[in-house]
Length: 305
Image (cartoon, rainbow, N blue to C red; front, side, top):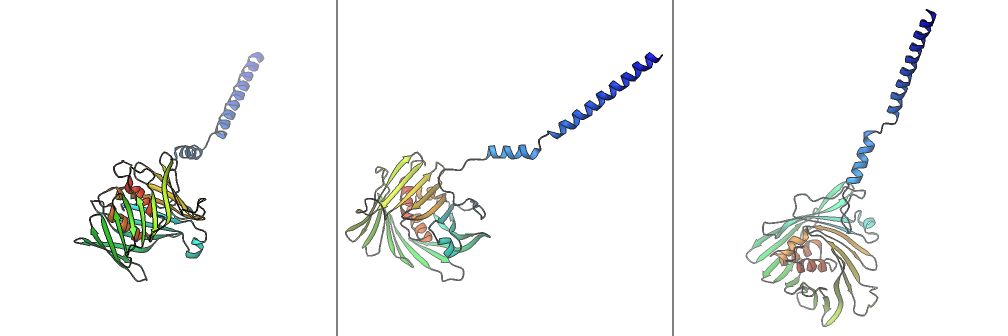
């Protein structure tokens, strides 16, 4: 009888030890379980799309990110020169421009990019009457200005707040009304380097040309003929994509700009390329740093890029 009791007690003791062991194992499994947040964060990092080559002035750099909305052309122009932000309180302009069904620019708004968001700076409107187009600006708190564009086939004469003549054939040429100053940028695809020449009177002031160091990238260098070391000239590094976006950065003796231009290639490739270039030149400001890019875009008409 005592022997049976001993066996019964031993069985109970063994069962209790096994139960304790199983409970301990369950608690241990909960300790090593990985939280869901860690797995999710890792997946997001792995699936993040890599950035396109070139500058990204539209990225969120302490200010809200800039993204395309309902506009046809988005230009994010960042001044990279030293002291610009300190002098003006911001360093980036955002141009949101519209185009009609034929691809001709009709107007838009320029904003200053600030910590609080986009602050409207200039509003642009165009109107057409026969062979003349008017570009009018509205600047909050400032005097507005108006330009008249008289279109004659491959030539546009600008009068009003600005005065110049722009011609497009095998080159995109900007000249003063009296012809004493002229900038000429080749758009002829037969000339792969798209040479440029800037003249004052009969004297060549500067020359420029494009090169293509790698696929999807082009580099423009402009300098004075006697400046063999390009100490006073400037260079534009441009990245272009099949969908038509341009990204480029300009550097001289000091940095000049970083630009993201979405939709720019399409308005330079259509039937209204000349009108669009003149409007862009007036809206963004007459700039030798932008004009080579306009010519590059025009030269690629029909290439599909």
